[in-house]
Image (cartoon, rainbow, N blue to C red; front, side, top):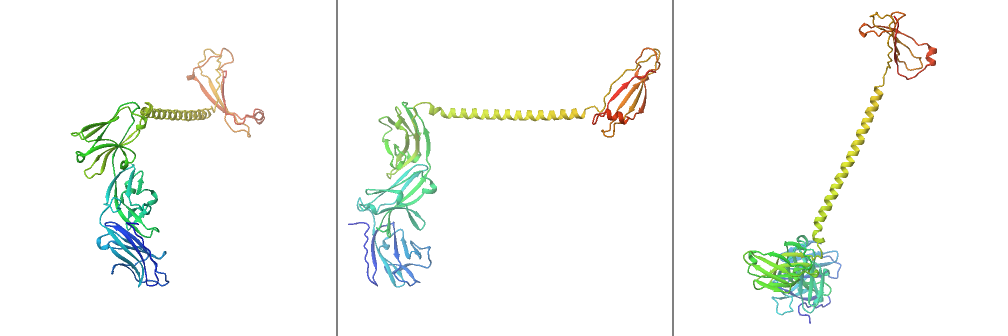
Length: 467
């Protein structure tokens, strides 16, 4: 006998109807489907009737229509009408019909329970559950012996999205576990319920309001064998409640370790001290072991019997100082790498700068050497003066010599000094008494051809003249 969800199907001839009985819970909801009658005619009027009163009338196709607590979706593609009745009340009990024109498609007889009347009754009060960011939480729904017909869904506007495939079905329980909880994805209302064999009829029986909250998180890494202490701070509203410590990734099902029914208590290697004035709990763990690694929760038991948590601590037991000192070593290694990179960049910049300066210097020197090449070459020949008493200066004569036509033209100058007399020793005259004479000399073609020096620069020579 199925006590809480009876599905009675009856197929009748023309003018008859299929009838279903569904047991729901006050405050819950019922979702059922009415297939189109087996006829080719179209339907202008489609109504949902409770007893004899029309509750909602279809005016649209392929979209939800809502009136008070009743929603309707006319699915023209699949030829069916879906109806949801929310927040069930006493007046909703009784027969509901889908009418396509004058043809009745299906009727549903809703039976309502006011409250739980037995331990196995699925009609239970809604409850609030708090989950914590990045942690894990578990929602558990109790059922009667017909647990295989259970489902789990999340409320999304006019519909409740079935997420049963993410849950685990055990004896008389449907367990939904959520990992890495986030407020964006997991805040909201969930439902446990029972469904018909073909899934056409569902009844939402218990509401779970899940709220995602922040919590104080910290990490500790004590050494194996050491005595370890940590602290949990609680608020004023948690002052009079019983405090406890539990271990596990999921606080909703974590394993209790110790609780305080008096100011000081100890169990095995764990002990707890409560400072009422500072609202502080001190937890001491003796002789830390490797298996002590895990997640610990500080919480309290509220007066309504629910658990609240205010601290989350992740403990990692280490066997050496390597793990605890690794952050400093890491920082040191990073600093050395950064210094090495900076030094390398400085060396590379210096080398590039030096090469550029050297290249620039060689370029300037080459240009200077080329630009400072003497256009003229001077060779001085001192004048010999035969007359010792002579005070006349050396006379210099300049001559201009033309190069051959096939050679680049340039001027050759000769400075010739003449002696004043034919005899005597040559004396160098004072520059102040010098006199200069210039003459232009043409180079003979034959001589030019023999001593052709194309592209050579002009040169100068000084010749002494005896006076």
